Amino acid sequence: MLPILFSLGDLHFYSYPLFMGIAWGVGFHLSKSLLKLPAQTFNLLFWGSFLSSWIGAKVFFLISSPDYLTHGSFWFGGGFVFYGGIIFGLLYFLIFWYLGEDIKLKDLGILSIPICISQGLGRLGCFLAGCCFGKDTTLPWAVHLHDKFRHPVQLYESLGLFLLGYLLWKSRKNNLFALYFIGYGVLRFLLEFLRGDEIRGITSWGLSYSQIVSIVLIITGLIIKLRSSRVPLP
Image (tube, rainbow, N blue to C red; front, side, top):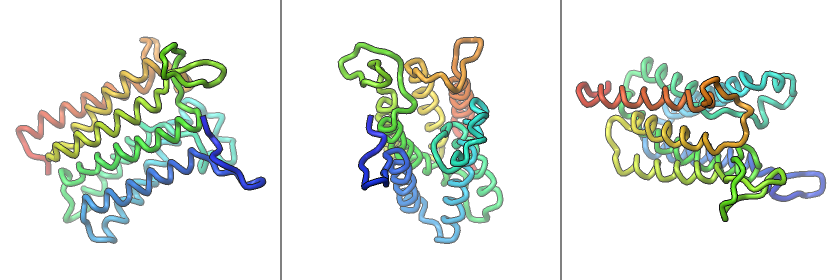
C-alpha cells in the first residue's frame, strides 16, 4: 500500500484523493466527447451529477458509520459508499432528462462507459490507500495489509470495470444503463464474498448490504433490458 505518494517537508501528497481527481477528470473529458452536448448543458449535467453523487456516497457511508459525521473533514475527505453515489447520481440524471428539452434517456446511457472507467481508476486509489481490502488468502498475488496477506479486491474490481467499460463500448445500444446495471451488479455481488472490511454491515441472511443493492441493480437492469426490447427508451 502507498497512502502517501511523497512528501515535501510537512506537505504530504496522498494517493487516494489524487486518483479520485484523476477519475473525475477522465470522466469529465470522456463524457464530454461521447455526449457532444452544448457546453452549458453538459456542465449542468456533469457538475450536478458530481455533487449529487458525492453527497449520496457520503450519506450511505454515514448509514453504517454515523460517528464520522462529527469529523470536521468528513465531507471533503475519505469515507464513500459507491452505491450511494450511483443512486443519487442516477436520480439526478432522471431529473435532468425529465426537465431537459433536447435530452433523450437512451443518449444518457452512454455515460455508463465513463462511469466504468472512472470507477476503475478510483478503485486503484482505494488499493493504494489500503481501504476496501479483501479477506485473508494464500494466493501468490496476495497483498500484505494489516499484518495479513489479503485478496487485492480493489484490483479485481478495477480490472472488471475496465473490461465492462470496453464491452459497453463495443455494444453501444440504447440500453447501456441496463447492461451496466447487470454487469456491475454481478461483479460487485461476487467480489463482496472476498471483501474483508465488513464496516458497512452484514444482513441476517449472510449477505452484505452491498450485495442486496447489487441484486436490486441486476433486477432493475433486467427489467430495463426486457422493456426496451419491446418499447424503445424515450
